Length: 134
Image (cartoon, rainbow, N blue to C red; front, side):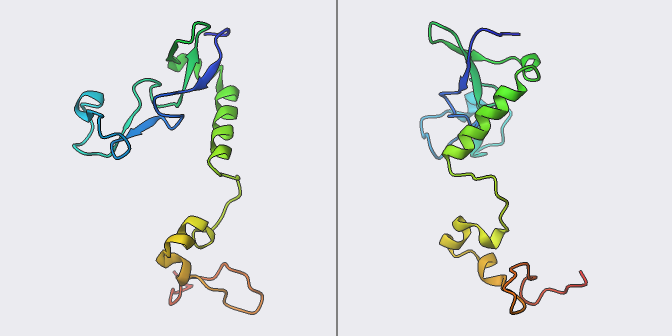
């Protein structure tokens, strides 16, 4: 286990653990992931092995964290992932699909399907027309 090199976000995938063909037209997915379905859209990042984080040596060279180091560094990896999620707007609060701002902004059907059933304003109603017995 490496205990002296810090763990940092993977520069190749920015911590996501995968690469998206739509974001980088220069990616050759046949070489990156020969086992992936044609035009799968996303493949596991080969730089970090899909975990989104790497060791960074003092000389600035990044290298993959071997799987046997995952458990000993679980707290650090979890902390870094929470930081990354907070940076992209995740608050940790659970929201029902019809309360999610992205769905509201897009006008998704699920937003207008759900409405309160009584004057309490509680928004846990079933979709319009849904059978509560189901």
